[in-house]
Image (cartoon, rainbow, N blue to C red; front, top):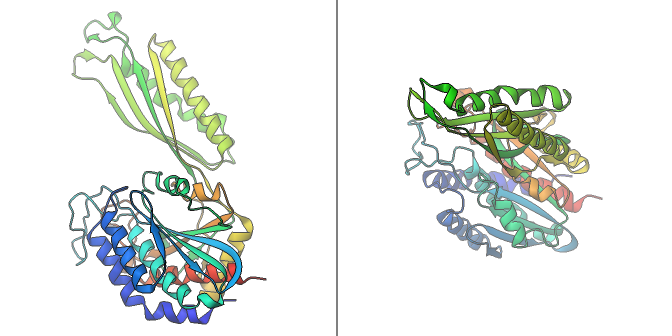
Length: 392
């Protein structure tokens, strides 16, 4: 089922793909600020000859029209960087901007999809249908996919396919599991208000430290006692801002955290429980509570037919030994907003290699990729699109 022309064209463009990735890595841009990145992608599309339109304020949607009628598949790459200081000093393509870094591999995604675009455009007359290429901004703040959907990215699209370079997966391995892939990722802020006062006279106060501490300890039972043990879920409070001085009883406490799970039903149950716990704990100490629960990404649930096709492509393109089954991650991915509307699948392409120091976790200042994995990613994009459009 694979197309040998695709394999050949990808191999011919490895050097250019790596160079493009490294250029983006030197010039990282944060969500909604990817203006240079968008320009560079547009330049490459112009060279190839693929028509495109820019989305607002950043990002690109491009279309390859096949030589025969058929369906339309969407291939997505995200392009934004992170507010992370790069710590690696042993690479000559280190970020040139302090406090900004491609610490999640989105630079590789853009380079891989452009290389796949070269291959697909070269064989466009053989395609039974059309390919939509999406270079999406603002994934890291879970807003980019929504923004592009509002601008028509899913119009006349039958399926979506995306991937992530993945340092936890060994280089040379590719994973696309059926079902849960990424978790929902929500944000929560809880504000408790008590009554401040002098530390020597606690009876005249309502101590926000006590309220906040009790809340943090008690909500751990939401996962252990209100969610099925067969259903993964995470409730984390990562930040507490409470108190002003060693001998002053705090009046206010602000807590920030995140919730991760793999179903909307569980997400709703956890949200309700957090609100209940906050109000009940506050009432127990005579304080008040305010909960702000912000929905981030939905769970990424790979469509069975799409994921099985991806697994078939992996084996046929790279061999049985390349097929890997990475467990679901509680990380978030706004690709979920595409698969909320249409069937699709999201894959993980291995780039972890301790010999090249690319085993660091995503979002770490030492994060880097084994660029050998990019060749598999570029071919996988193109072979999957070919296989989907030309399948019987």
